[in-house]
Amino acid sequence: MPELVTDGERAIPEQLCQTRLGQSILEGHLRRYRLAQRYVQGRRVLDAACGVGYGSAMLQQAGAASVLGVDYKLAALQYARQHYHCPGVCFAQADLDCFDWPTGAFDAVVSLETIEHLRDPLGFVERVWKRLPPGGIFALSTPITATLAEDPWHRHEWSEDEARRMVESVGFTTVDELRTLRSNSPRELIEAGHKYPQSVHWAHILRHWWPLLKRMLLGWPNWGELMLVTHKPPLTAPDGPALGRVRSTDRPSPAS
Image (cartoon, rainbow, N blue to C red):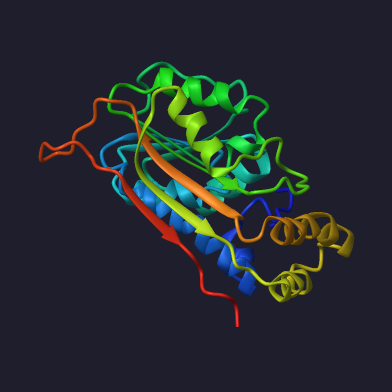
């Protein structure tokens, strides 16, 4: 199987836990999946851009009826099948810029840290809206920044307001959200570079982690991730009242 390496964008828990920066990044990913877990019980879930699959397993553990994790990278899917295969979860290769599915095939779509990579992010959001049944859940997250810092992976970046408008313009209503503000220090970035596997050369570290440091410096303090849990009306809670909007801001404490 081709070697997979955490590169500042693809999260591999077994590697991220080796450094303080990696632990912080991993916790951010896990926190977003934990929020999505609240809305998937009994639902057929599409985990769009599932990466190595740990999030798909988390959604199944939260009571999802089934989970299909899709990703464009075959090596990531092979890793997912090896490490996170479980009953009710399956993985398939797909390019989200052109991937489509039958209307009503899924009751929930989870797409975390994904739309910034797509050629047509609005087209993807519109496709999710068309394919979800009434009451369907769409949970997504994306980096937010006040400035456009160079990033080797992202085709698009938005401010918080721009991201909200894009999602709500097609008809989705936000019922829950999470804002994560990054406070990783340059010391953590340097530590991460020293402790990655030996197969990762310094040229690779400089290519992938310098933009991360540059983004942090240019976008400070408005750099982080915005997660929105939205629904396609109508949606009511089991006890009758419509789901209300909840807002939570996660501000990590500065590194010592």
